[in-house]
Length: 264
Image (cartoon, rainbow, N blue to C red; front, side):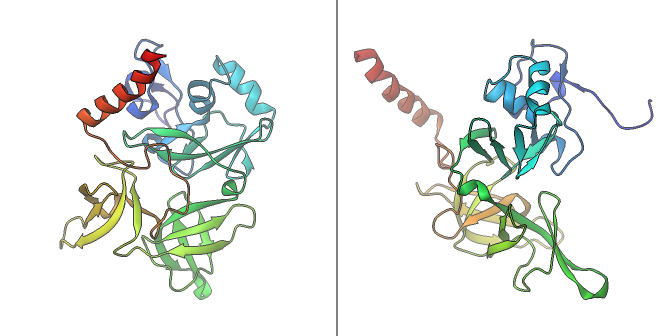
């Protein structure tokens, strides 16, 4: 067994939500070490080449990145394998475009365009709140940030509105019943609903029950729930608005879309 970190990733072992075709080659881009886990991130090369179609080859993506056109959370990133993840803001100054990485109801990262005003902040989930030496309170977020001198009311699992320009917390959302949340992992990834109940299991996982705007109920683990608003979301949502359709509902929706095109 070779020593050291792995530098390669076979295409068949790549996460399914990257949507790489099986016969497109042997290899897949392996995300660099960064703020998001390998299987919960999307490398910049896939975002630029496979999603936006701004490049045809890896070499073209390198040429775009090395011109310092691509920013993630307001910082220039020249690494084409940089792992962008949930809630990250990707901006392209050359084309004046801004995107926020959010999940659709099928667990894939949607190419969700946002306004320049919305690109100035992102939502962060608090993983833990601790005290440093000399009694300095600090919070650790889902994207690896450490924020010092946080509000004493902010606890683990809460969500903060983080200004990317100033690096300050502008507001926060408590993890409580009645809050609007998005599921970030598991079988219900991408779904949005109101938190209804919270089941506590001693020695096991806490289960959160949610209800979406159509009245459908679903449940997931506490660690998979990301609060995004109170009654309305603080960030704009992808086209499906976090509503998961059944197979029959999807079929009927596609038929409605195709019907006007057939008559035209």
